[in-house]
Length: 290
Image (cartoon, rainbow, N blue to C red; front, side, top):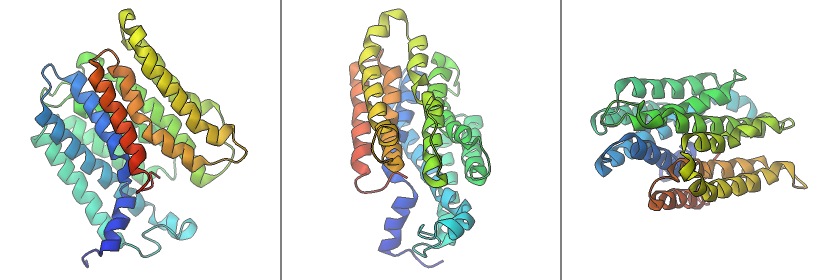
């Protein structure tokens, strides 16, 4: 394979959806903080590096698996248009999945079972999402296992600290988001009821928190509601539908889901989630989120 040119490296940034990396870091921070009795910043750094590689590798493989569809229906995509070779995308995709898995295992001591589950969900989604109605659930599984992997770092135990609540909450949010995103390429009318999955995290955070923390949940819950409705206005309340804008905004809003579950922690962690949210919006100005 020939060495990629500078233009091709820029193309790889687009393929990797790297503007979404702040949302990955936010999710990993949530799992790391709530899953550890004595959180180590070194472990968090390894988690972010390994998780970023698996995420980016999965995005490369997404275009590699979709190449036949894209050649027929989306010839402007990087691989069909000749901006980057299929061989390079495949190689870098699989390489990053392997490298990220090794880093999670050795650097963060994530349990092998969660690493395998995360990789399996990424590969399964890329292989079958064009052919399955329930592909939003498969995409949700990717973020679900990402959080579970972060919970299991160092200790190897992912069941401590009500790990399932935020994991299912993020998965629910991804189901609603992916449903909207699929309409961008598939077309058709967007039903309102699948978008309700976007709001289950508020209920789950309320159930998880004790009653004496409900007041602190009000601020992040209000911010989450306002932002999601602001994004959905591009679909349901505007004179013209802009699904891409709605999807980009909802993708950037993933750290707000994390904020719901960190509202009972020290306020600095919510501020960091807010910083990841702003970083995702900033990165989208340079690299498209979808």
